[in-house]
Amino acid sequence: MSAATPAAGLARARRPRRSLAWVRRHLLDGYALLALTYLFLPISVVIAFSFNNPLGRFNYTWQGFTLHNWAHPLDYPGLSGALRVSIEIALLSSFVATLLGTLIALALVRYRFRGSSTTNLLIFVPMTTPEIVMGASLLTLFLNWKIPQGFGTILIAHVAFNISYVVVTVRARLVGFDRHLEEAAMDLGANEVVTFFRVTLPLIAPGILAASLLAFALSIDDFVITYFNAGTTTTFPLFVWGAARVAVPPQINVVGTAIFVVAVGGMLANVLWQNSRGRRSA
Amino acid sequence: MAWLLLFFVVPMVYLAKMSLEQGLFPLFSFSWAWSNFSDAVSAYRPQFVRSIEYAGIATAVALAISYPLAYWIAFRGGRWKNLFLLLVIAPFFVTYLIRTLAWETILSDNGVVVSVLRDLHILGADGRLLATAAAVIAGITYNFLPFMVLPLYVSLEQVDPRLIEAASDLYANRVVSFARVTLPLSLPGVFAGVLLTFIPAAGDFINAQLLGTPRQYMIGNVIQSQFLSLRNYPTAAALSFILMGAILVLVMIFARSLGTDRLTGAGV
Image (tube, rainbow over all chains, first blue to last red; front, side, top):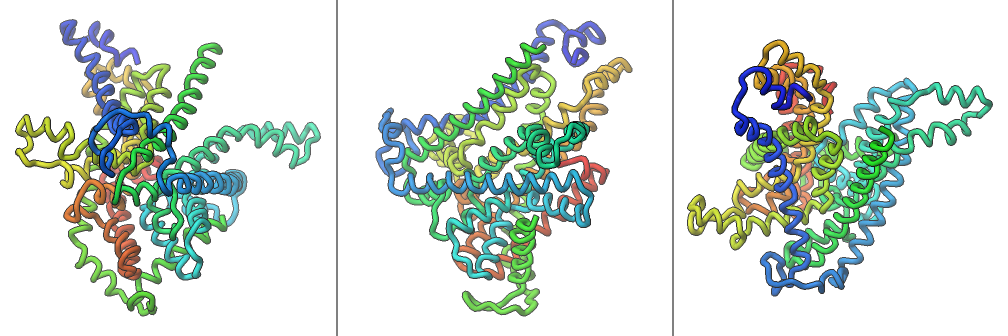
């Protein structure tokens, strides 16, 4: 760090003038600020337009400030149903994916079994497959097996694409795991089941929690794969897609903003809490 | 494991079989119809080329935007690194489609950006941003940005600052020490980021649909409409496979051109 700061550079080689050094020092800061502004530009538009009072069916031009949309967030036909489906699928699919993914991760890290390298590949490939290809292939399967598309097929599809992410996340936690702790528990008379629930599980719990949150976020935001396998069922992203063709009600912005605030608020609280804890222990 | 086998491998096999079938909906019969592939390529060559082109440009722009940002967070972020990372990811908690619709608003004909560019005569009096290739590429760049920033950050964060100090002790100036120390050490992150951005970008159809016109349509749009509107499953399946194959080949060329295959192991 120290060599990278202009102060050290100033003392050493070329001794540029102070003002120049100041510009150089803050060039990157300014750039980062610009980049972050760019990242937040569309979000601020989304939030601003959630307070818009559009005249026609399209919420594209600013007409006037209103709180009406926030007072009646679900006051648009089909919206609340779509949102409920999205939440149900996200909860169920992240639960199933986390359960199965954690077991796979445990098996992969703990045991060398026949086909474990194939398994590794199988975990990796879905993450590098374009969503559209995965959606199309699942649809082909459901068509061939004559499974009617709907809630069930969406759920299966979401679990399928979430498992890989869960495995990768949990495995990262397991790799740094000290197995001596398990041995110690066994030495103290715990059997395998007790050891697993009292030692192993609590230690990898943060990884499992992170994985399930990731799975939830991926599921609730997924459009492409859902689009291929939904049949007549509508999730929130599908609802937005359908709406975008005929009208864009500001309620979409309200719901989008609400999800954003909840998710980011939670993460922000976590970061700040860890930061303050880190400072206290330091 | 069985789940993945059942709902990833088996569908892929069905997709492969479907790609070799012939006939009209709903009667398809299996017939080793390799012509599906050649027909698909000759019919949709422009969309294929466009997909690779748009995804390539978007990936390059995303790399250019993300590298300094990731560098800044890794080396200047200090205690607030996690907070800045959160700020990078935060916008992506707004649903993908809503984000893209927001870009539609920003770039729309009576939006601020267009009017400023018209006043500056960068755009003609009736110039547009929406419905151009630039809009689609911009949308793709924005939507997949975190896939670029995060791997870059991870690899830059691991660069030992003492190595950079050592370089400057050995009389390397800042440019040289960046080019000879920091950059090579962050290559695995570059590799992973490019991969994670390019793959979804090449298959994307949402940006082209919302921010472009049929003249900007990419291969994803074709697959989507062949599958869901026209119900021409064999052609759609063949197109899916060609897309996957093309991505695979490009990724391998890219890995080779970065010079090392061990990066493949280190990346992602």
